[in-house]
Length: 346
Ligand SMILES: *[C@@H]1O[C@H](CO)[C@@H](O)[C@H](O)[C@H]1NC(C)=O
Ligand SMILES: *[C@@H]1O[C@H](CO)[C@@H](O)[C@H](O)[C@H]1NC(C)=O
Image 1 (cartoon, protein in one colour):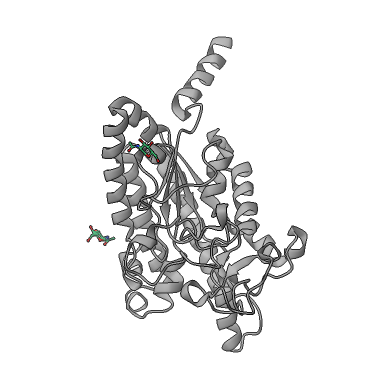
Image 2: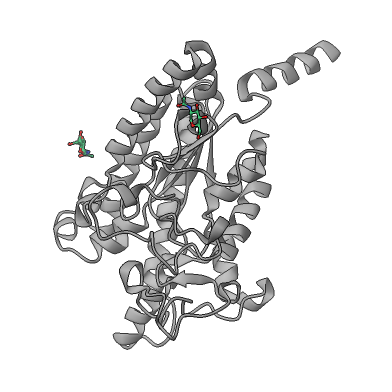
């Protein structure tokens, strides 16, 4: 019996690893650390007032006033308090050995989504990751590099743009798929993406879910303008919940299919919904409008540091711009996900 318990414990340590040596990030603007600064797109945020509460007040290209969730998660695992962007020349492979971000604002699971703003498609994020593996092996040798690759925690966060920037804005996908079919199409892409990472050596993965995307200030403003009153877009929230259920099912299935893997579903929806519904209980004063400019529709280049409406204390706001949470919201959500889901990887 004792032998069995010890054996089980050892197997757990063997299969999950005692410690996370690196955080590796894929996704969209919810986690982009500045890769878009280095490509030709309008989806950028490497200027004030973005980053005004980041280390050194630096506008890194993160779509927030400060850090994004993956930065906080890296810190929670005892790693660097932020995850640097792969395309940022200020960092090299010795920095990336403990954390690297391949995410690109404006992208999604669907190739057609990344085309909208000419950002990095998901398949190309994976190509950059392959290049990273080569550099890591060259830098640390095969054995050390392979150990990092298999023990690292892979965090993915995307999907909102597939629905809001692509499906509901442009007609092409809408003419091909019903909303249910489109969700299923995205899930097949998520599945082959995870299998690709697994094939490349990843074993510990967190698949991120969608936020209540009908409550983003931009969607509220649009909802208001078409006469639905000042509320969240309930239809979009329903789609987010349905898609999250499908992702959760996918995670369950892949855990049994991909031997030696440990995959979790990190669902920001419930905690995010609580924050939006009862902002005051989290110390916020505003959830319907964002801090930047009028808070109704501005993001990216429309967030101007000289706009007199921009708030002075972002920690009173749930949203930083009309599409992205403030650092404080990001902190609350990532602490919650760490406590409830990701600490399994400790
Ligand atoms: C990475 O950059 C640091 C200084 O920022 C330097 O000391 C180190 O040698 C560089 N490493 C590689 C592998 O280029
Ligand atoms: C997306 O584009 C890449 C590169 O052209 C291609 O290899 C991949 O199959 C495409 N994905 C889907 C789901 O069509």
